[in-house]
Length: 257
Image (cartoon, rainbow, N blue to C red):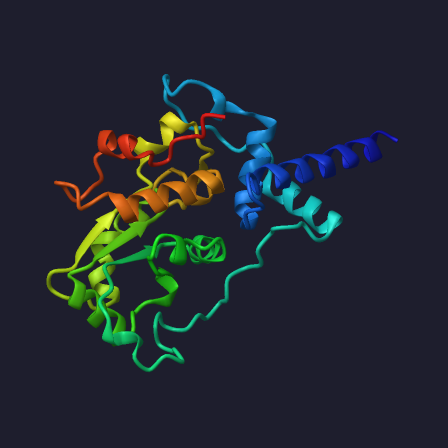
């Protein structure tokens, strides 16, 4: 009897989290975004003041979360895993004149799942900014030509592992970056995660001990923040984003309601 009660409670917890993570307008979300929402539902530290600043360990084992997902079946809004072998960005298009135009902005995500989630929720149209993942690099020559034509900006969104923090600097080794095209990292950085009390996970033994994933950010906040950054924020004076400037633009700030 006790086991069935616990099972029912776990199922309800995931369903409640699924409703919250899709708010306010039926957003589509990844499995890990749902997992982090489960953790926030159990331990809502994101509602605490920004000071003192700290991140928190996950309060629900991921294996247990996956077991609940397998038991309850389909979850509305939950995206499937990204394609394991995506085509190179811009490699295929039915529009022969697409590459005749300039491209003022492009977003590159370290995570294929995050890139897919942003695309699924309309960021490319809403922000007039194509979204690709590291797995889709190198860019097609036509895309780099479009960036060069508009003296565009490549924005980079990544997790906080050592490899991800170095990803913007490695980007020119992964794809051709034309002269005059800026590369602007927009986070995540460790200093951005602690005031938000995001959930951290254990990194690889050879990397940063505590890692915070972009997917730990509430999807609605992530969408709003990415839109504001790629449309309104120009290249910062240093290679890393200025935290005070980011706060003025609303980057990774929680909704007031």
